[in-house]
Length: 213
Length: 213
Image 1 (cartoon, rainbow over the protein chains, first blue to last red):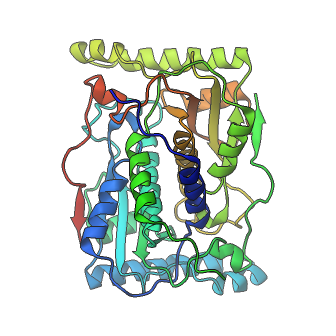
Image 2 (image 1 turned 45 degrees about the horizontal axis):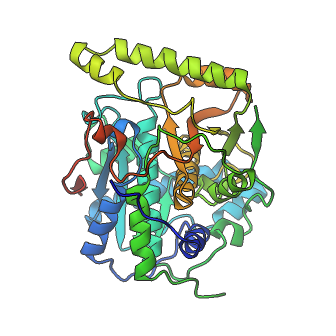
């Protein structure tokens, strides 16, 4: 067995740059993402950790215009409800935000988790069944980083009702909806989160919150 | 605003190597991980995506011997229960697996999510409250990759009952337990998952499962 690869300081610095420049993108150029690029990114996503090696991630490419329109309507409905639930000055600020790039992004990818996959024999999730969804979230994050390294952006849309997304996309009834991703080339790269640029919220500037026990 | 960094082919290939050589480590050397390294990894973890920029990850460093012993007992109890629930040939195979490095790993880190953080004003999680836990899972994955790039391994322990872990670690009652991580130098690097080397399960060798809609 080999001793494995050594990652040098130059790589680690570029990796840190990648983490800093990964963004939740909502403003896309319309240029298509080549199919072979998407295939490669999806294969890379499957290198994520998974509970008990169960690889529970399930991907859905959403290309059909009627389904895209239905997802768009569902987003609008949920976004309007979220806005209406806010008190007045916050509601106006919320209304000014662009929270999804569903119209522009050339690629739409929905991500589900199979809560009880055969692979892995159930190992590791008996006391923590949500670990299948956590595994799927880490697969999304893997794809996100690999995409950004190619200059491609990803936007995570969560303003959707899981049951409605599952109905629109007609997936197996047991699948758990984890995320809807818009994928494409960003209008502009940035190292500051869009919600921070828009003045909605900012990153905690302090050191991480760590309890000692 | 800058056009942002460009990640070249050499970096992307090394990133792919990092994804392939990240492992769920259960066999650690006992050498300590320097405090400044852990601090750096925790800061890097906070560059993960988070729903509505809420940064809901909450870290707990577990150093006290009584608490480590209690976590170890909790793991043994849950692991024994998982083994007992299996039919006979599988139970014997399960018993032969090493599923955690709690004894050897120099650093223990528990990860929780605050399900209702003030930061971010609740944006994006109204219809999908689990996105705070997904954000925390992505922070763990960020830390995992950054650690591996320094030659440090991480093992994800999920054979624990969340309520019991919260009780042992005496965290705020609303926090949701997401993962317990053992961190340290692996005995040996590898590009094959330990569960595959042990013959328990193997990665799906086929292309990713992608539905078209």
